[in-house]
Image 1 (cartoon, helix red, strand yellow):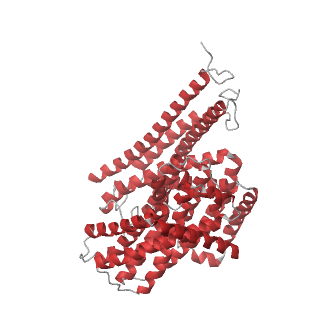
Image 2 (cartoon, each protein chain N blue to C red):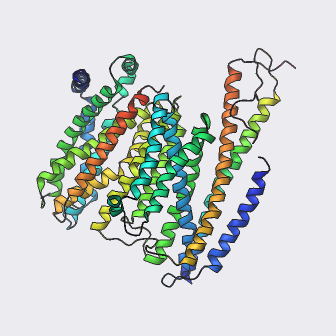
Length: 53
Length: 225
Length: 299
């Protein structure tokens, strides 16, 4: 039946939207983890610059 | 109370005088308003049978766009010469500044509306079938609804990127009940098909609620960095 | 704390699958609309969830503004208590009961009014200081997601049933659209504002939005009485079996929304920690970047 198409369209649209949002959250988490790794990976000296070597 | 009104009056007079001397902003806004009316005239056939039903909407959409251009430069002048900082440290209450700005904008937008209305009447051959005097409270309350929130949001947008687009972005959603009332009320009066009484009451409620909210919160907004 | 999240996730997935099964298989077919009406089991729970989240944002925003000064903090606390007590008493007064729309039980209204102080004090207790603003941001963002789903599934439902995608006088869908617009503008303000007081500006906007919602409702309601329009989503009472499935579906989506909010909240906590770490580094402090800040907790 034609009307059932709309039912499935609605259900699929719902999960596409949720999926897109969750995907953006995962991406943002990944970027933050990257930043945290960079921040802790470079030991800073008192002057604020990375040690020479 | 006397000093509050004297501060408001003084600030308003200063704004109006400055605006009158430069006339730049005023002239470009007037021309913009005229253009809006002309574009509408070409887009929506004035001779159509239904035109009486849509003129109310067109008029207020036109006023909305014109008022946004006026509101956008509300605080611009104050920013330029650090006048805003001077206001912050002055003993004048923040509310006085807000009311002065809002009233000044009200007069300004009122002038724009007064100039646009005859154009609409001419282009759209507007004849009022209902009680015409009711158009006045709708015009006053509706304009105040746009101006009071517009002045507040213009101050809010001061420290944002893309300041000019931020104002309509914040203003339009909040203004929807006011716009619905203005348009429906104007259409009701023009067509004479129904009473605009409810819409006038709703506009009055909207104005009271949001004027109170703006006065309550403006102090915080003014002192935002 | 860390172990609860995966367990809750699995539970939520199972609950969502169960709700889907109930919605598609168990629930009876509607006499007028056929099987298409089953969109309701996604549309309505999303709406209720979105409204709940926006309500949380409103309470958090008011509390944030009130907490800025001690005098307002105490005043608002007493006002909230007064609203709770006064609202409950008022619901049982005959004068007020006459004003209620038909079908609305006073106890239901009383419970809703009680939610205001309950939420106010719970939120104040569990989200002190900075976390209050983070809650506001989280609930606004996730609320917009659920609200988007309402606005997408609504027209998809309307088209086969009424033949039109949208009816401007449909009070529920139009009010939801305005609510969506207000909160999208809230999120835009948050993103574009470069002020140190962004949080306060956003809270003020949220309060404005909340004041606006009843006015939106009334303006469209009156417009609708003058210009009768089809009501998308149907009105009137519901078959108890359908109501049962609707509630199951809502529970499932509430759990899901809770998990999403929790994730978003953790993301925000992490983000602010990193920003504070950067700020402290650029100030030349000797503290390591991952200093333990008041924001971080064991989760």
